[in-house]
Every structure is written in structure tokens, then in C-alpha cells.
Image (cartoon, rainbow, N blue to C red; front, top):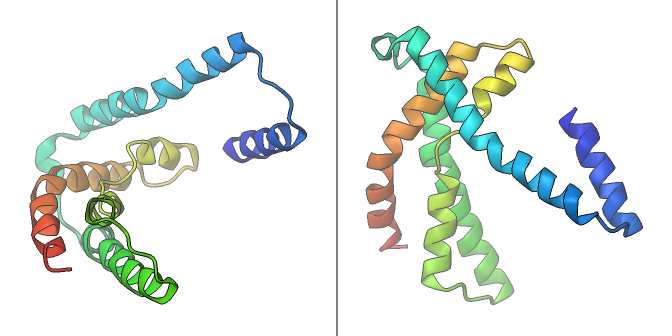
Length: 149
């Protein structure tokens, strides 16, 4: 269904049809509820699972390595190569912001998407919680590394 909504909205925008004010406000309210509702859902799943049941398994560790190490590293390389080859100078704050954003925790809606796709909700919840908790440690490390980049 999200893909259908995306395609519908692209067609709507390409045709230049104005969105009625009441509809824009309503959709804005619904869009603003997505993250809080997904966090409530994660909280419910966490309550059912218990915090003591989290284990750093191979798949979880690989997901965290991809999110916290590989993603920022790829972005740093792209910024260095892309900006250097195009002759563009990005401000330091912009570079730092982009790299930190590339290492943000997993999507809070990931367990909901996993449930809708009949996937492993426990794994998705574990990864979201672990990445959120570890993000507190990762940001200072990233900021220290970015001082030398």
C-alpha cells in the first residue's frame, strides 16, 4: 500500500493538482503520528519480550556494523571523492551532519514493517533497540573521527 500511495502522489504532483487545505492538514496530522505510534508499538513488543532477552547474534552484529561503520564510511568516501572531483567545497558542519545522519538508529517503524510482511518482528525490534541504545556511544566516536576527515 505505501508504494501505491507513493505512485498516486507522484502522479498528483506531476499533474499539478492543488491539495485542498483541509486534506493537507489531515494528511500532515496522520504523517506526524507515524513515529510516535511506531515507538509505542516497539514499547509494547519490548514489554512482551523483556530487555533481558536481547542477544548480540551474528545477524544483529552485522546489521549494526553496516549501520554504524559501513554506512558512515561509504558516505565519507563519497563526500571526499564527489566533492573533490566536482570541485565543490562542503561546509564542515554539513559534512558532519550528513555523516552522523548516515549512522542514525534503524527506523522505528521497522518492526511494524516486519509484522506486515510476516517477517521476524523480534529481530527487527532487537535491531531497532540495540541501534538506538548504541547510538549514544557512536555519535561521540563519529564526531572524533570527523575532526580528522
